Image (cartoon, rainbow, N blue to C red):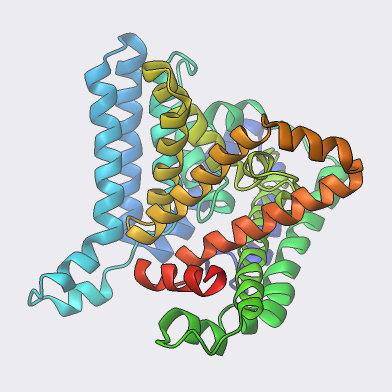
Length: 392
């Protein structure tokens, strides 16, 4: 995300945070909105204007939903946001697929920065208003919530009420040190660990051969497995780096942003793994997909698979991401049945606690890494070829 890793990000962050605390408290939210809007206008001016209008419309709909819980209006808001997400993300591919005489439009059309994150944030906001969990939301607070630069490109998907309620009216030296330290950790992960160490492995010649090569038989099984584990670690460091920078930057302005990663690669089973990986997205799917589906159908399995299908489609509407979602849902479903079997109880009794934990963690990491076979390659057929070479 060039918005974060550009040379001017750190100086702008420090200067704007100092000005933020120097001005009267009543003007601080307005200042944040002005700075965030200016940055976004410089990057994607047309989309920023559209987004401001969209947020104003969503706020008006929210006030209407607050006065009267209208299921049709709530459905219309959610459907409109999903339609906007699909349009912005897939219009260029659609134009090219139709072979229209608009190649220049297709090439210059930019997918708006952070479109997936802000769409889910606005959907959650509308549904929380509909459920009565948000009352009398301020338009200014909503604008800051959506446009706030530190969390705009890559989340976390913070809930509106948490964003507003957890902000502080003052800052301490502890906040400054913790915020700057967290930003530094994020940059170290992104520039050193990813850019220097893992980038050549995860996206080097081996990636080209696995993703686009025709002959996977020349690659050994353990090389395929280690490549997928490297891809998993790369994804973890990438997501956690953005979260570190977002959390640290936000703290310099008095905002406490939720954690998005809690050492998921050290968890002993897939259920714990998903409580600690991309926490904001997992929570969003739990609150807005899993619980409503479970409440309507009383079928936990359907709710589980629905959640992971939406999670996969959130990343990209494709067969590969659908398979990825089904892979993880199947793993959690299987684990839920496995842990209640006599064999699982016997193994738990026979193995020491550290050994059982280590075995569970290794199995979880391996299973999650194998899921990257579906998203590190451009087609589902090639994904299944990778899986076949590993187990065949």
